[in-house]
Amino acid sequence: MRSVSVIGVGQTKFDEHWELSLRDLIAEASIKAIQDANVGSKDLEAIFGGCMAAGRFIGQEHIGALMADQLGVNPLPAIRCEAACASGGVALRMAYLSIASGAYDVVAVGGVEKMTDVSTEDAAIALAGAGDQEWELFNGATFPSIYALMARRHMHDFGTTEEQMALCAVKNHANGAFNEYAQFRTPFTLEQVMNSGYVAEPLKLLDCSPISDGAASLILCTSEKAKQFTDKQVEIVASTQASDTLSLHDRKTMTGMYGTEVAAKKAYEQAKISPKDVNVLECHDCFTIAQIMALEDLGFCRKGEGGKFVESGGIDKDGEIPTNMSGGLKAVGHPVGASGVREAIDVVRQLRGDAPKETQVADAEIGMSHNVGGSGATVVLHVFKRRF
Ligand code: COA
Picture 1 (cartoon, rainbow, N blue to C red):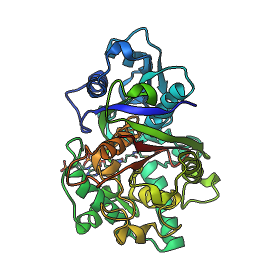
Picture 2: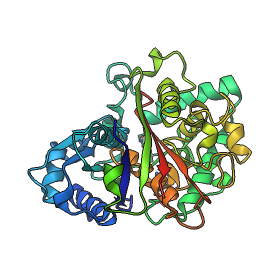
Picture 3: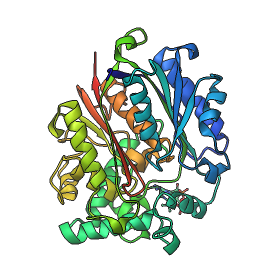
């Protein structure tokens, strides 16, 4: 397998973009990444695009071809990847594999979603299609309620508290305040999160990621050729993926994601590192309980101790594993097909030293992005290493 590096990143602000179409979002993010990578469109050989449900949200399918068309790079092959909220992570992994295998030298990765053209109710139903339609959605379970079940069980088994979950939101929103691309830039106090009203008990409004529009893009290149384009190359030293049952009731446990555990074990082996070597983490905090479970499943703290780990400062900028310095899905927003790519971008920014100074982790050399589809039926992990 050949070594692969990220040579360019670009994204739109994540927001409610009433004035922009899906096409506009794709174009803005991709052009920024192409410019950042210093490549010409003639250098690109393929496009891999993550998008979860454009058919449901705006009535548009065939997003791969749309991306190539919109970028004016026909007749390049363009492939849409769909894995619910992990669509972007899977697109990144497919692009990585296409270069590692020797098929291409330079490819573009995109992730996009335009969710706010429909009502919250319709968005919730579209998203719930990523769960088990027959066993979950048919019986009224949307994602806030599915994650609420996981939260309840975590509270029951390990004594995790609503305050500990709320603290994830407080910390992520505090970081997001410095991120110019974030949907929410207002910090919240613990009291505000605790009083924000239940969406699905014990999860409150401010425990949830929002409904968002946005796009994100990366340019990947063989590490050998990357030097032609940039002197700030970031190598992908591990790319792993795992699947689990679609429905929660079929799992051995509701208090963690087996897919994350499996993908993490493989990622640490591939990168020849242990959790202690990771300097910065972007994890998939679609709900605050998801962040607590991710910290445990990725091996940054012991099972059941995620809440205490957050409380004790483990995820802070100067903590054991600075986490979601961007603001995470919670504050940055969660345009579902784009989030996996955006998480990777924020890790790359940290390793390049390009994060806002208030949230930049000093001397970050190794970073990890963690992207989840549904309630854990798909998990994608990437480990990145600074190469300059
Ligand atoms: N975090 C912070 N603020 C939020 C927010 C969030 N997740 N969602 C909405 N807000 C804010 C809005 O900006 C608005 O503020 P304002 O009154 O100052 O303008 C207010 O809260 C109400 O927003 P509204 O859009 O009416 O909320 P809603 O009730 O329609 O939707 C949720 C709120 C939580 C139900 C919705 O965001 C949701 O379903 N989130 C989960 C998405 C999801 O499941 N993703 C997939 C994960 S697997």
